[in-house]
Length: 123
Image 1 (spheres, rainbow, N blue to C red):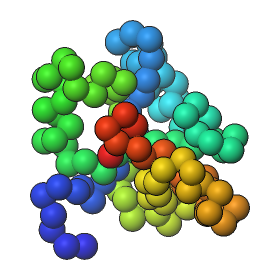
Image 2 (tube, one colour; image 1 turned 180 degrees about the vertical axis):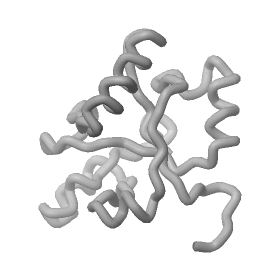
Image 3 (cartoon, rainbow, N blue to C red; image 1 turned 90 degrees about the vertical axis):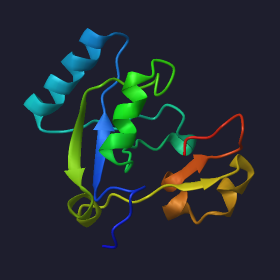
Image 4 (cartoon, helix red, strand yellow; image 1 turned 90 degrees about the horizontal axis):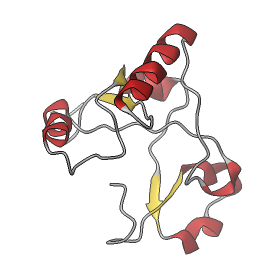
């Protein structure tokens, strides 16, 4: 893999929760069960997906220092080697307008993420 400062060879799944304690509890459950359960919120088509970021750790750490950044995420997460995850079926999403969803083949629609900046931008 080429060396890039903007992308990591690892991916991180951050735990969510209504509070710091809830997010920590969710992390401990994932570790105890040995699995991450995908969610369907904000996912079109009823697919269940697990979200990861490939942002490098220094960029992620900056978000936790700034209280206004990354407000959807807790400081808890699980990190995986990107190659390992890819070998198990993990794939990058396809950022596109919601209107383009139907243009995707059915077996690719689970990869669709709505991207209509500036209102909707998960990049």
